[in-house]
Length: 40
Image (cartoon, rainbow, N blue to C red; front, side, top):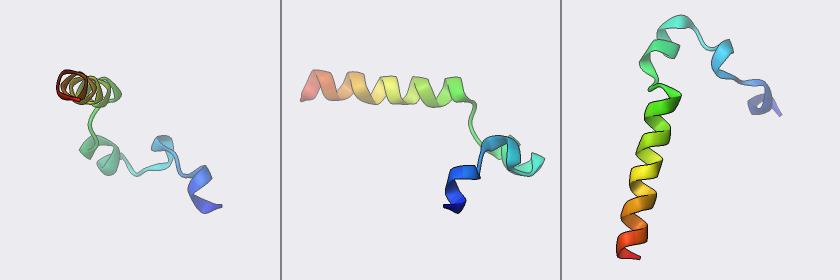
């Protein structure tokens, strides 16, 4: 499958810079999880 070999490292530099950092993504997911836990 083509997607299985499509990694961050294979992206052009401009596209890499346009993406959020892994730590930022993790923090966003943690915030969502925390919100669901409080209201779920």
